[in-house]
Length: 486
Image (cartoon, rainbow, N blue to C red; front, side, top):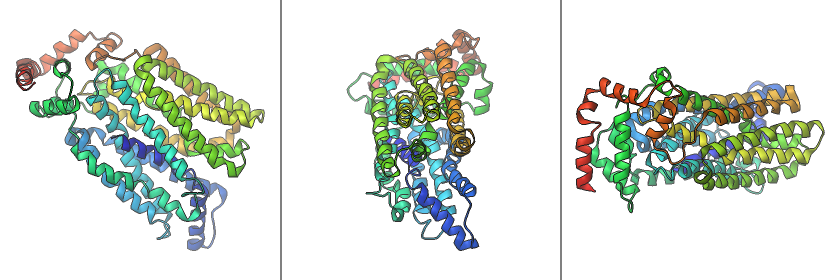
C-alpha cells in the first residue's frame, strides 16, 4: 500500500534533477522540426507545463475516486490502476527515441492520474482498516513514504547515478519496477471491512477481513463500533459530491478539508520540491554542490516524517498541524529576509525548515483527518473534493511559481507565509482533536457547530431508511453472525 505513496513522492521530485536536460531536449527537437529553437520564456513555459501537467492528471484522477472505490472497493481500485504506471513509463521512457516532447507530457499526465487516485484511496483504505488507537500512526505512514520517494529520486538524480544526460528517460520511467512488486502482492490483501459491511452488505467477508487484520485481537468491540456507525448514518447509499456539499450536517467538516487541503499545497512546499535546484542556485550555492545539498534536504524530509509519525498518537493531530504550518510560515518569511539581505546560508536553512515543518504534520494529517471527519457514506465524496482541491492547488503552484519568482523575486515567499499562518489559525480555532475517537464520536463533536443535534441525525436516518429501522443497521443479523463466528 505504502509503495503508492512512494511513487507519488518519486514523481514529485523526479523532474528536478534532469530539468536542464529535458529543456535541452525540447529545444533540440524544435530546432529539428522548425529550424529554430525556443526563447527562454517559451522554454520556461514548456517546462512549467511538463511539471504541472502531473497535477492536472492528479486532479482528473481524484475526480474518479468516489466512483471507483464504490464500484471496485478500496483494494480493487488500487489493483486496477497499476496499469497506468506501465503506460506512463512507456511514454516517458521512449520519448527521446521517438523525438517527442509530447510523450513526456502525456506520460506525466497519466502518472498524475495514477497518483491522484492512489493519494486518496491509500489513506482511505488505511483509515478504515486501522484500529482507532493506531489510526494516526498508520495515517501518517504514507507521508513518510512520500518523503522517501522524494529522497530516492534525489539520490538517483545524482550525476554519479542517473543524473547524466543519456539516462534521463530511464530516470523518468523507473517507476515501473516497484509497480511490478505491487501487482504481485496487493491482490493477496483483504478488502476494507467497513466497505464490505456497509456498502457490500457482506457480513461473513467483513468478519474474515477483520480477523486477517486483527489476528491476535478480539474484534467484538470493533464490530460494535462499526454497527454504531451503521445505525447513525443517514443513508446506506454512498453520498455524491453534490450531496456532500448540500448536506448541512457535515458543513464544517467540508470547510475543514477545503482549508487544510488547499493550505497544504499553497504552503509553498511544491515550489520547494519542483524547483529545489533553482532555489539553491539563486541562494548562491555553487552549481556542482547543489545536487548534494538537495539530497541532504531529502534525508531531513524522511527524518521529519518519522518524527511526526511516531509522535502523533502522543501529541494528537492539532499540535502537528498547527506547529507544522506555523514553522513553515516563519521559514517562508525567513527566506524573504535572507534573500533581501543576501544571507545565503540562512536561505538554505529556511528551505530545510519548510521541508521539515511540512513533513512533521501538514504532509500527512490532512489525508488522515479527511478519513476521520466523515462517516462511511460521505467518505468517498469527501476524498473526491479534497483530492480535486489538493491537485488544483498543486497545479497552480507548479505552473505559476517560476513566473511569480521572476516578477516578485524574494517577496514571492510572503504569499506562502500568509497561507501558512491562516491555516494554522483555522486549525487552532475550529478543528477539534480527533485522537482515539471513533468516527461516530468525531461526527458528534461537529454536530453542534453544524447546528444539528446527533439525535436529530439518527432520527432522520431511521425515517429516511425503513430497512435500517427494521434491521437496526444490520444489528440483529450482524450480532448473531459475529457471535457465532467469533
